[in-house]
Length: 344
Image 1 (tube, rainbow, N blue to C red):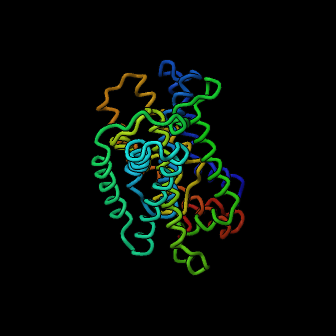
Image 2: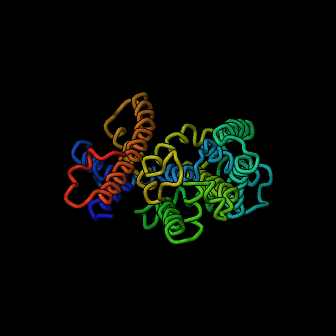
Image 3: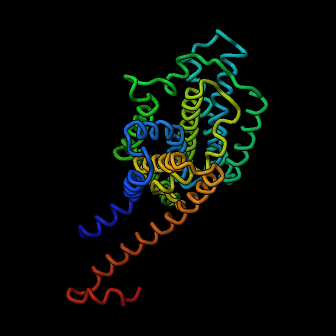
C-alpha cells in the first residue's frame, strides 16, 4: 500500500478531527468569545454527558446493532438508586453504595437488552425502543418530583472542580475514553469485539463467542449511560424524570460522525470523542450567536441526516481508494493512466 493511500485512508478514518479543527477555526473568527479558554472549558464540560452516550452508542454500532434505550437508562439508573438511598431507605446506604447501585442498574439493563437480542434473537431496534418507552414510563411513575438534596459524594463528579479551573467531569470523560482506547487498540478483547461487528458469521466460525460479545457491548453501553446519569444528577444537584430526554439520536449522530458505521465493525473511541466535542461546539456556537431554540432543534435534525450521509460517503470513498490500489497492482507498470478505464 502506497504512502499516499495510507495518508488518504488515515484522513478518512479521522475525518471527525478535521471537522472539529475546521469548525473551531471558523467560529474563532465568526462567533464572539468562542475561542476563549473559559468557553473551551465550558464546551468540554457541557459535552461530558453526551460524550458518555456517544461512546455507549458507538460501542453498539461497532458490534453491529443500535441502542435507543440509552437516554432512558440515563434517568432510570440514578432515579431508582437515589429513590432507594434517599427516600425509601434513608441513612441505610452511603453515597458510594448509591454510585455503585446506579452503575449496576445500568449494567443490568444492558445485559437484559443483550440477552434478548443475542440469545432470543429479538430485533435490536424494537427491543431497545421498547426499553426506551418502558424505562421512561417507570421513571415518570417512580420519580414524579425531583429527588434532592443528593449526597455530596454522589454529585462530586458532576459538580466538583479541580483547582477551581477544571471540572472533574472533563477529567472523568477523558479517563474513560483513554481506557476504552487502550482496550480496543491493544487487547485481544478489542480485536474480537471489532471482528464480531465486522463479520459475525466468520467470527463465530473462528471461535469467537459472538453472543457473549453482544451482551458485553450492551452491558458497557448501559454502564456508560448510567455514568452519564451520574454526571447529569451531579450537575443539577438532583434527579428528575426528564433527564436525558431527546439525547439518544444526537448520541447516534455523534458516534457516526466519530467514525462508527451502520455496517458495524468500524470506529474508534478517540473518534467518538471528537464526535461528542463537535456536537458540543455546534450547540455552544448556536447559543452564543443567539439562534432561536426552534432552529437549534432543526439543526440537530440536520446533524443526524449529515451523519448518515457522511457514513455513506466515507464507505464509498474508502472502497474506491482500495479498488484503485488493487487495479494499480494488476496493471503493468507504465499503463497506470488506464486505471480509470480498466474493467471492474
